[in-house]
Length: 235
Length: 235
DNA sequence: CCCACTTTGTGCACCGGTTCACAAAGGGAC
DNA sequence: GTCCCTTTGTGAACCGGTGCACAAAGTGGG
Image (tube, rainbow over all chains, first blue to last red; front, side, top):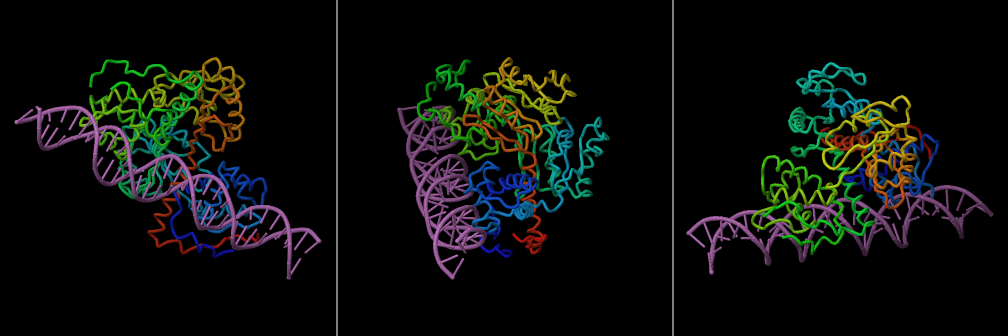
């Protein structure tokens, strides 16, 4: 049962699968807490909100960790997914920008949960530098490179104003960081080999608004209105 | 140039396109501020961080709004995209859960920018009910249905603890809301016709950790270590 | 008016991801 | 040991999305 990395482990888990592993992990943790020893792909799929065939294919990318006729051992699967995601090690993250959002992120217990540790808070505003937030001292952005090096920061969370984001990104990348979670509403330009993930509240709302409009349009009989450009434009 | 909805407007813009329209809109707004009158697909694509062929295909789903040899009229395109996304109307949103995150969202100016208005803040904790945040009075969750009805809320942002999210979702859906932006780390079960978008900080970090681990593994020569399950397990 | 140049809009081939459906594998009863 | 039942792992069809590459359309100069 060990040594089964034969077929599918040769480097290369589909991106879509990687994005779902944390979901499975969360569902499995819930099951472990409730004392379940094994779980079928069907049950786990329901808990994670996905199709069971997709779940099985996803897990098959990590190896053959199930038992036909029985299902998956909950604890064992938790361990395998955690290891695959790199959560068996401790990641030091720095949050740059201690405004409303940065502060909320620093205090947000949920994401420090497993494997992650907020190791530094930085800001440019002398007003907030020196503040204590979530048990950490806010340091000045001038210290950025030194802090990254000293604390072994490998993931940076950008919660700065849009105007500052690119500049800070350049600096953290120059300091050797290759993983950035960006909350600033800008498209960052980064060299190859640097991973950026973007969380954009405004964009999410706009997507919802689009669908909401569609729904209400359908109710009221479609868009018979305003098909014209209301302002004079000659182009 | 008007009346060109002929070819591609018959209801049905690809989801991937919808997700990029806000990006184009943001880039266009920046250009409008800088006084640009027209823009080529190439320049706009660079500003939005996408391939220019993709951008042209995306825009072609809205209609034929470009001029060959010239490009797109910036203001006109802003209007068309805004209208398509439903940003020409005013959306009232309610934020449920006024913890660190909810507070940050309420104060986050960026997402109120265009078309969206935070119309209500609600929480279950009597300690925070009555507080004034971002010019709004925090109301008690008991008022949820009444507030939604009274203020015409059509989009709800869930920033509650995980344990409360499903329950709140059920209530807002029962009250007629069909668009939810969920920050709670749970998979919400919702009926057909309800749109959910999920923002999960923890998941984003885990995806970054996965790639980060890959990168450092490669450096240090691959995972020759721990291929075994460290705890005794017999399954 | 014509020609050279620019830029859009899109047909088409390709690719990653999803889903179905089923053979293979294991468990348990007798 | 054999048979039946459950559940995995995956082959194969399918589907949405991407990007190349080019014809069509429009501009401006002479």
